[in-house]
Image (tube, rainbow, N blue to C red; front, side, top):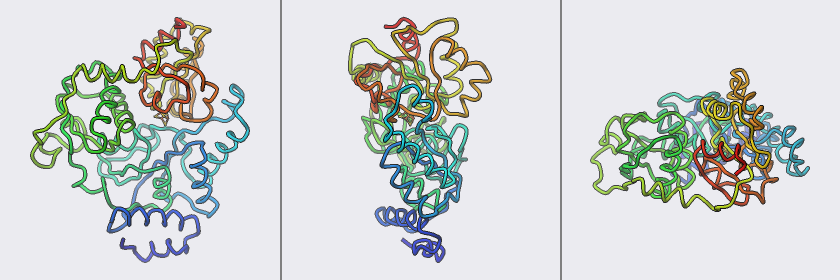
Amino acid sequence: MYLTKEEEKALKGELGQGTQQAMELLVAIGDAYEAERLVPVTRAHAASSGQEGDLYFVELLADGGAFCRVPTTTNPVYDLEYFHQRFKIAEEEAEVARRVMEGYKRLGAIPSWSCVPYLNENIPLFGEIVAFSESSATPYVNSVIGARTNREAAQSALAAGVVGKTPEYGLLLKDNRKGTHHVRVEATLKDEFDYTLLGYHVGKAVGYGVPVLSGIQKQPTTEELINFCAMSNTSGAISMFHIPEYTAEASSMEEAFQREVPEDKITVTDRELERTYEELQTTSGEADFVMLGCPHYTLKQVGEVARMLEGKKISSKMSLWVCTSATTKLLADRIGYTGIIEKAGGHVVVDTCIDEPCWSVYKDKVGMTDSPKCAYYRRFREAKVARLRDCVEAAVKGK
Ligand code: F3S
């Protein structure tokens, strides 16, 4: 890969050891993908976590004096004080999370601790080249916004944030953004939950590629698109997709495929969504708790939970958790949503995710969620996946 004089200096360590290590990673990736050069990024999102794999790289860069040269947001870890008080987290687990959060702060990253940074804290524009990791974030910024990112790891996104550059390959190039699979949607999409099922099914059916969806009858909402992104990039590796007319880069099927539309197609009917729904249930037993907000709930979704819980009480047999970003919770507090949920006995938590060690208290329990991704990464024994309304109702009834 061609490097400028300044980039050579960074690789030789003349800009500090931490930057050198970030540069080594980017050059290795660039060489592996036969990129011709590095290109500037305007922003990054690192899929941080309170786990050891993340700790190693973050401290490696921070100890080497690196710092983020472009705005770089962070994914959920967990609020140590909050969870320690409730769940008595093992000291060695807590120490890892504390050091990860400290490491990102030393690097000058923006401590957003959210998996939907593209909604509030770190919003790319059409055409921007960025380095975003995290399952919903990568396809959302590529497809919905029309910015350009590869499917980064936490480490490669952080390295790009530190160097301010990324190797030019993959989805940064127009050719690779063209559709690879035609998905004809004949299923009825009633709400956000149907988009989670659709995403999960499409991810599994396509595996790796750029699906182009036809048959969508109306503009999907932000939440529906977030769900489609998160689920298709969990059951499969979908970093980009097109819904002609509704996503950023294609107004027609021909434009989405950058040529003729292939004759072969994957057809999704109500039957496929029903089957996906059934596959996601790992138990028919009673749930012990409800987990919502994977990906982090938007303000609208927190509001929906509040409206469903207004004047009700969550059963003493169940607990109900809503995960969101600190930015969203601030507004939910001001509007009064948090108060209503808490009055009903629920919890609104920030900075965390179901895949974090802070939830290990539930490892032998059955969790109910509206998110197939939450069920997939679960830290609990069994999962029931259901519509939001059914989850909330179960929490109130205690069964
Ligand atoms: Fe977000 Fe964690 Fe779910 S990062 S999408 S809450 S698994």
